[in-house]
Length: 253
Image (cartoon, rainbow, N blue to C red; front, side, top):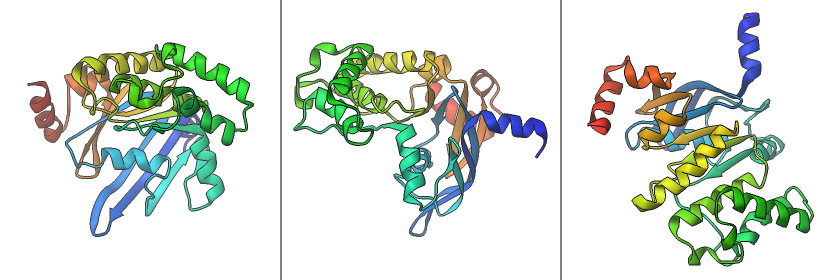
């Protein structure tokens, strides 16, 4: 490895090398190699079933990989529980379904992990939660329960909950796909603000307008492989692979 390569790697908060994942006989990830720099926003696109969600779920061990290396902020993802816990403390995840605890208020959903995992005092966690609710634009919903909120509001609570752990990386797995069209913008606006603040983000999404506006680079998945990875403007203006061109022609019309 050259000195220049070592310098670039020092900037990388996520490094994936030849990552493979099987579900039984199904080879879901087929040698994924990529890296994400600190502060970079990467949008992952591709057809359904191409491995996009599986890929980001391996980054915080919601799915385990059977071959290859995943390194997050200097910790390699292995079966060592200490490494898994260290990585999960630094990586926030927002899902397609909101996964909020229905029996807890919005405030308690946000403060649960900081008080239990990071042992933050309750008063401090409450103050931070209110700041986060301001940041995502719904401070007035603090004492409500998830069932009383719209889908867009619930997803914004889910983002606030992930941010409450002060992660270094945020993973988004199709965060707007379960929302009504009028609610999508409010969630994307929060994600835009996060990106502008310098948060490292990997976003699986079909929101091409968002990708063009916010992403530093695009990863195109197909059949468990990264078939194209390029800076955003180059990806959309001058795609190299025929499969990428065909996919973009379908989604862009």
